[in-house]
Length: 125
Image (tube, rainbow, N blue to C red):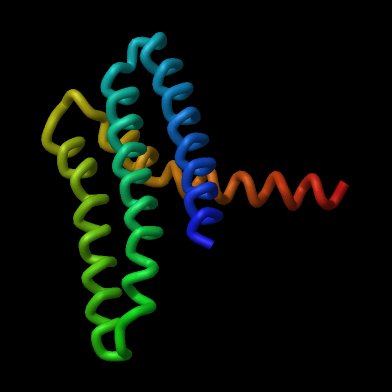
């Protein structure tokens, strides 16, 4: 099962990074360097968050009911803090575009949703 999880992680994260790099190159050639930097920054942290989700799953299964709650809440708060880093950096520094960083933070989720939608559309045809 962990092998399947790692394979899914690799696919989603690779596609998210390729999409972010492609979009960043387009913005870079258009002269919007802060947008490119914000997009890449947000995507890196999104990928890191996605990897942490899979790494924390086994630790949730081994605990009792009471400690599982604390482990889950701690994991969620840690991941929120990690996702806040690119947003704070983008808000504080003009070298990064804030809205591009937000788009980058959502990049892995966009890839997952996009793959599901494409699969549904292709299955309907």
